[in-house]
Length: 537
Image 1 (tube, helix red, strand yellow):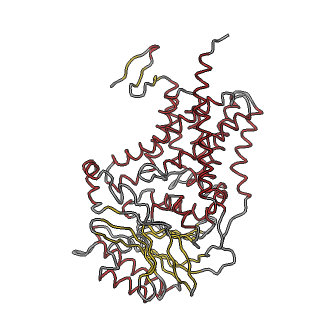
Image 2: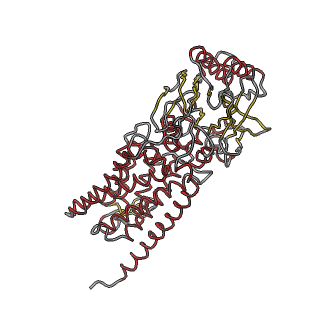
Image 3: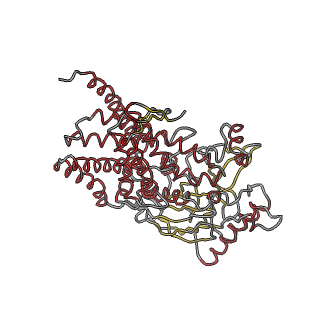
C-alpha cells in the first residue's frame, strides 16, 4: 500500500484512510509532543508538571477531528509515550521487537480512549460556550482515563499497569489525595485539571474571558488545594523497629571467578554485605531482595549454609527471596528465616510477569525472540495475600511483601495491606541495566507508601533499594549496580487509610462511572449523526 492522490491535492494513507493535510500534520505533531511530555513527566525524568500539557495535547487531538483522526492521533500519542517509557524491555529481552510489540499493545488502549473522548466532545457540543458543559466534559474525560488505565492494568495476561498517570505525581500536591483514593483519585484529578486547563486556553483564543478565567482557576485549584490536606500516618505512637536493607549487587560475566556460578556469587555478595551491616548497626530485622538466593537455599546445601549462618550470626529474623522448583515449573518465593536458621512463613508471587517469568505461546515467542529461551522454566502463581508473618520482640508483625512488579498492581498491594504493618518490595532489577525501570518501580513504592500511610522499603539485588516514609518522602536511596546497605527506622502501622479500606468498593464506583461516561460518549456519536442529517435552514 502506498500514498495515493485524492481530491484537493491531499493524500490518503491507505491503512487509516486519513487525508494528509496541514490539519493532520498538526495533529501528528501535537500527538508526538504530548507523548514526549508524558514521558518526561514520568520517572526517571520526573518533570511532573509536564503531565498537564501532555493531557492537553491529547485533548487537542481527540476533541475536534473525525473519529479516525482521533484514533490515529491518540494511538501515536500512546506509541511515543510507551515506546520511550519501555526502554528497559529492549535490554531485558535483547529485542527491539519486544519493546515495539508491548508499546503497540498499550497504545491501542490509548487509541480507544481517544475515540471515547471524541464521542464525549460530540455529546457536549457547547463546551466552547458554557462553563457547565466544559466542566462535565472534563470530569467525564477524567473518568474514562482512569477507566482505561484500570482495564489495561488487568488485560491481557493480567495487565500492565506501568506508566499510570498517578505514578508521575509523587512530588506534586496531588500525592496528598493518594490515601483517599489511590491511583484512581490522583489520576482523575490530574486529568480533569489538565482538560480544564486546555479549555481555558481554548476560551482565551475564542475571546471568552469569563469562561477562560473560570476554567483556569478551577484547574489550578484542583492541582494546588490538595497540598492543604493533612499528611496521613497510620503508625503514630507505635514503637519503631530498625530494619537492615541489603543490596549485595550482581556481578557481570567478566567479574565472575572462573568455574564459579553466578547464582552462588550473588548469594555470597548479599551475605557478605549483610554481615558488614550488622557489625556496624544494630537491627531488628534483615531484608534481602528477590533472588538473593536463586538456588533454593531450603534444599541446596551451599546456599543453605550461607543464609542459615547469616541468620544465626545476626540473631534476628531474615527475609529473602528464592526459587522453589517443582519438576519443570517454579515459584518465586519470599521466605522468613528465623534466628535459629529455621524456615518460617513464606509468600509465593501470585502475579508472574508474562514473557518475563513465563512464556505464553512459547513456541511462537521463542522463534521471534530467541533470547526468550532463557526462560526455561515457567513460573506458576502462588496465592495471596502478599503477606509474611514475623515474630519480633515476642509480637507477631504482618508485613506486606509484593514481589517486584507486583507493586504496580493496586489490587495486590491493597489486599496485602488490609492486615500488614508496613510494606516491603523485594525486587531483582539486574536484567534491566541502566534503564528507567528501577526508577519507575521505586516511584511506585513511594506512591504505595503514601496511599496506605505506611513506611515502605524497596530492597533490590542491584538497585534501586530505598526507604520511604508514610508520606512518600525518600529517607534512603541506593545507586544502581553498587553494593550498599543501610539501617532505617520503620514505624509499623496501626489502622488503615480510606484508600486501603475502600479498595473493592472504589472499583465498583470506578466501573459505574465509566459505564455512564462511555454511554455518553456513544450517545455523542449518535447525536452527531442526527445533527448531520438535519436540513440546514
